[in-house]
Length: 432
Image 1 (spheres, rainbow, N blue to C red):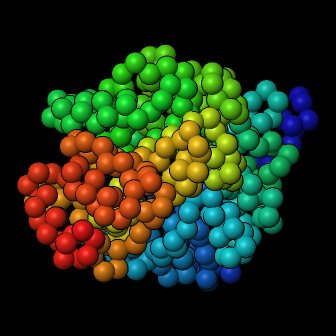
Image 2: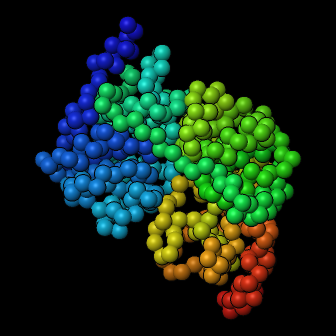
Image 3: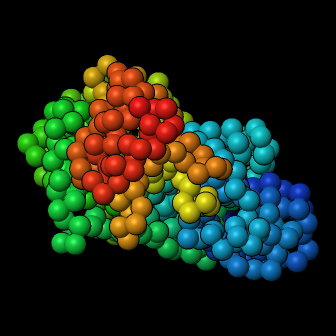
């Protein structure tokens, strides 16, 4: 038996034993994948006070009586797992960009315990964080107690996410909860195919050969990229690796041959998609799952060959600012790495920062190009880092343009039924 195997055996505990190690006043940090078996046992305890739990993107939270009372969860990215708890004021929202999460957890919140979800060890005792490394792999260095929970459904992905058995304090293995957090497949339905095909055509004109691309997590830009035409040797340096990037790799459009760094490899810090994507990534030598401190560093992004950032937005105002996280007057998601990629790509002399959105809401009542945001709406991307706005109506080139020229360009890619109203409002606001 290898030394690491002996160590693994000594460190194995039950989920209940792991939960029992938490003390009143502890401050726990975890990644974007939950140690669910441990968490279920922890929130059942009735003898604790003032336990804080920071999970930047919450994908699971037991609806137990203690949640929001003695157990205080906080997140930096709202979703279906937290909307109700947030409305009930049982979970807090902490604004922060993806690559700031380590500083938020370790320095600002002073978290002393780390929970990690990992694969089973390989033949050398290394465990992969599977589908998300984010900040927490690095944050383990600052924790007093590191507890990992194994997951047999995770793909083993190489990169700086790997952690050795010797680097953790305890391992929950036998009664671990083996889930797989799956996302939707790329939308290839006929209902929106014309929109996707049109936007894909515009993106084909904007994305140069050999560009290193980032694709924000979203239905519209992912599906639209299925219609890229005549592109070759694209590279990938992105926050979230989705099914579309696998499909572009299988089609030979993504090769990573021309990248300035990590040639031959797609680099990312999180994976979201269907099971076939996870199966494809398992032990795939052409990909790397790295810490967000590396992947989302704007200086690293800036250095990528022809860095091209492609992100979604909820709405764009006539000054060229984007809201990508607020919907119907409420916090809907969070910042993630959108600003990092937009600013890094905008600074790259051969790069481009692109925002993609449909010109009109699904019900046809509202324009997504709006005169100005409603009071209280945060600006996710300032006008200085958005160079192109793409809708099914066309491409608005904003880089190098005056405020009046930018306003005119944005009105031209708005839905025709709103253009007169937008022009009137722009004149009223002094933009034209």
